Image (cartoon, rainbow, N blue to C red; front, side, top):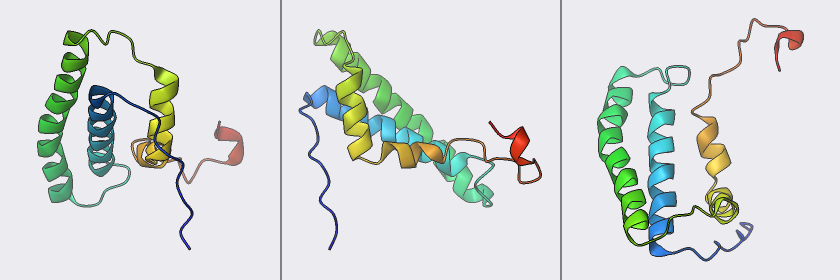
Length: 107
């Protein structure tokens, strides 16, 4: 049986769009990350899509600003990102540890 995810916190439509667009950008950056990909064509396609998704992210933030939503409620948005597996998805963006470095060299 699949464990039930916690419910998403209450978000405005703009905040929901911000979270969705942000995660789409993170997913694309993970596909482009040269430490984790072996396929140039897949990385190229992700880079091409990144332009569109980055514009959507900008538009979501612009909409929020124009509607008077001038503050980002980081605790609520962080909870939404956690529910949507933002930590796992953003981990693909990081540089992989050097396999040749000893344990003392790792933070």
